[in-house]
Length: 191
Image 1 (tube, rainbow, N blue to C red):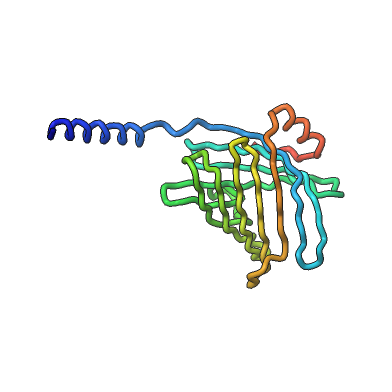
Image 2 (cartoon, rainbow, N blue to C red; image 1 turned 45 degrees about the horizontal axis):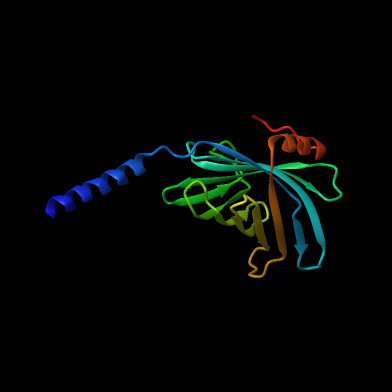
């Protein structure tokens, strides 16, 4: 009986070591498109956007990037808005720059739930530094890969949001992404 327990213990220990030593998942890109709605809670104004982004999950580098091309309704000029979720053993941070290459305009922390590198619940608390706006951002990724985003924007020192953002993003293929990128007039990204 002792021998059986010892063998079982060693088997479990070895399996745990093997799992811990396993390679992280490979780099993966999923393309998303959606038309979120922004509601100004102070005056009731509702605006829409067209948003297109590749969501690149790179476990080897330790981050997820979303370089969104955003076109506001009625605007002729699309803009790129980068976001990086930097994961570590102690949690995650979010920023619009990776590394020390530039001064960030967005910084915050992230709560990630679900299977590592396949998180299906992502919650961010961020500050938009130029205006000191607080942003609470909750994202759900469904089994179909539909991404649902809900954001609340707060003026400095306020506990009630002044703006709500609601978006649903569907997966599109690389060809459709390229087509929409051109249609929206997205600027060329730096390598």
